[in-house]
Image (tube, rainbow, N blue to C red):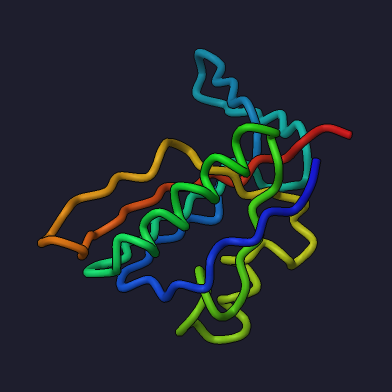
Length: 134
């Protein structure tokens, strides 16, 4: 498993969810609830990035990154100049998943490319943060 760095393309929109803690909830007939938590680490964080009106060459870079990441089940790495650009340092650490979470970013689905006009596209990407077993 290798690191694949996301291209240095600034997103125009971003959505982030820190994920959940894997657990199962049991409820008795009297309403008493017990929760069994399976780990103290989050999993399945979600990140969505939109790149509006970028060049087709930049769109091709994103597709190439998708292939490099998913073909070998590699980790996708964001930094403060691509996926986390514009966020405060504290929020950027969560978006980049470098705060000790152990989560590894991967594409949740292939990028969507919408042609705006010749040579210009809008690309939407969705990512999931996986907690890989080692």
